[in-house]
Image 1: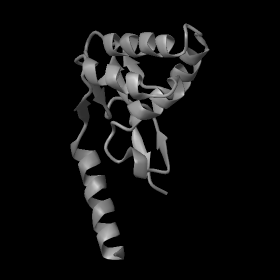
Image 2: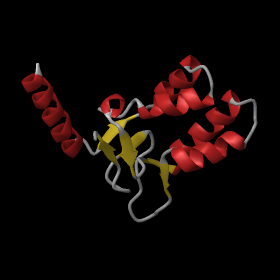
Image 3: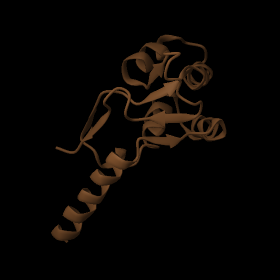
Image 4: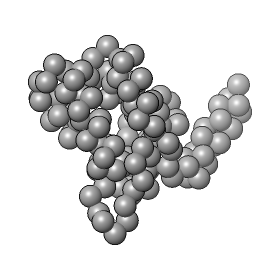
Length: 123
């Protein structure tokens, strides 16, 4: 069992290095919000889209999304939280970073792990 766990952790770590981006379509974001009990649950469920998130102890850095994707998520957070904008402070502290650079535009509906040195920490 221990060898399997070591192998699984090694494979997951290698996948994290290879996988620098994952798709997060608008429809999937909407479904996450529809199925979440509240806005905080939705934020956690957005993070759960990242491979290996549930197995990690904590994170460093922030995943990055495009400005359009970030605005869509923020509007969904406001809807889920009955227009109480205090949830946006939580998102700004704990949510995804937004890519405001015109030089290296991030495609919409993508989570990028590379731009802000995002890491899943297992210890």
